[in-house]
Amino acid sequence: MEDVTPSLPAPAATRNPFDTVTEEALCAAADSAGHTLDPEQRAAVAALAAPHSRGAYLHGAVGRGKSWLADQVLKLVATPKRRLHIHSFLRELQRTMSTERLPLPEAVTHLVGEARFLLLDEFHVHDIADAIMLRRTLVTLLDSDVSVLMTSNYPPTRLLPDPTFHEAILPAVEAIQDQLDVIELGGDHDWRTSSTHSGGFASGSWTLMPDDACPASTVDVALSATRALRALAMQDGTLSVTWDELCVQPRSVNDYLTLARDFSAISLVGLPAPEEIEPEPFQRLAYLLDVLVDADLPLDVTAQVSREELAKAKNLPRDADRMLSRLSMLRQG
Image 1 (cartoon, helix red, strand yellow):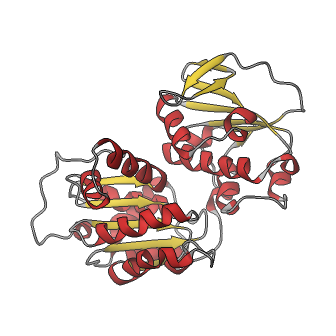
Image 2 (image 1 turned 45 degrees about the horizontal axis):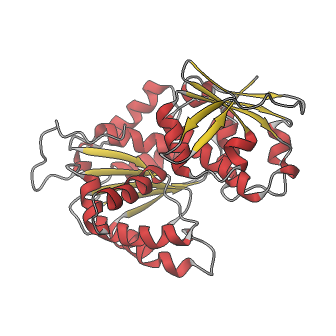
């Protein structure tokens, strides 16, 4: 889904990619998928189908259907287009700058390629280093001729909310507010918690398992030329790996992106009680879920506690609502 589509005809100079996005088509897509849109979702549909000179920034609470709606817009766009999750976007940008030895503005142009419409999904900023890179990236992108659709759990003014660092993201916030139409998908009902899920990530499971010792890891899995992960097993495209190896060890988002590229399913063994989880491993679990949901890959979890007990923990990571919403999609094993 991340590939540029250069086979499509180049758009006319005056044609706006949003011209082919209509309220009727978005509603028809919802009907076809069996989704009954609530009033707030219908309002967002109408706003997305309205004319946009540069693009739109769609934000709202977790589980409100932002990514699904954005993907339907992407399907309707008839110009060369590209879809990237924020994690993949940052990874590709960093890799392009490194391998092609390009300065950031040229790397952005190289990354977008022939696309004239970019969907940037789940935009969020919590890290000062990412903020510095993204503010320059967004200013470059929004000054180009590429139309942009962004989704986020945060309104622009709440990006990088830590007051110590918020000033670092202000140029990006101003660029979003000046050049994109900011659309709120209101309401707070999380449709993931009340929907019947099947296939992809949602075909995974959450299974309670007592605190039994896991067998020793026996399989090396390459993460890079110099780094590897010790897994329990690899079979039929499924990677089975312990909690300690996957989340306690200092893994990065790029490591999880590599695993999502190389495997078709992940089995996470031995997730402990939340009081035993330090902040960094908890945050890595959230990043792992970001990657697997975007790749739509199944996740099977064996844990010492139920999801309900996990949700009551006092030490949940930032963006915990998004993490818990995603875990609710897993069937009870």
